[in-house]
Amino acid sequence: AWPDAGGATGSIRTDHEINAAPNAGLKKAITAYLKPIKDQVPEISWADLIQLGGAVSVEAMGGPSIPMKYGRVDGEPKELQAVPFGLPGAMPPFDQPGVRDPHDPAEHLRYVFYKYGMDDKDIVA
Image 1 (cartoon, rainbow, N blue to C red):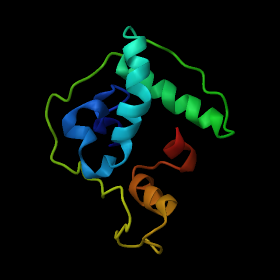
Image 2: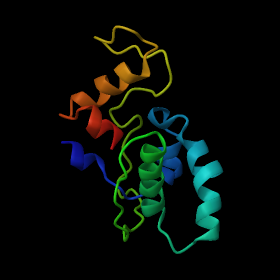
Image 3: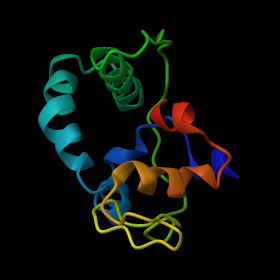
């Protein structure tokens, strides 16, 4: 089930997760955009900072303001899962069965997350 895959623990920042193909492109978000904030405000957990970054991004793109609750604790994967964590790669072409346009990132995300019972709003959140 989807919740068993993890949660808002900030573990995406670990080498095992950030260097996995399904997370391609996210390393820049951690190192170039979030790390300077973390360096200036070391009291905030990575888990909270990553969630705050997502909430601010949604609002900056015209979405709703997402209220934040702080206090997440940074997590480290206890049992490393085999890459790619059951997910396809994050860079096109996306060659999953049933994907009509292998270069359409939206269709790719729907393929990945709809099987967990998520809809477009869940994917963005």
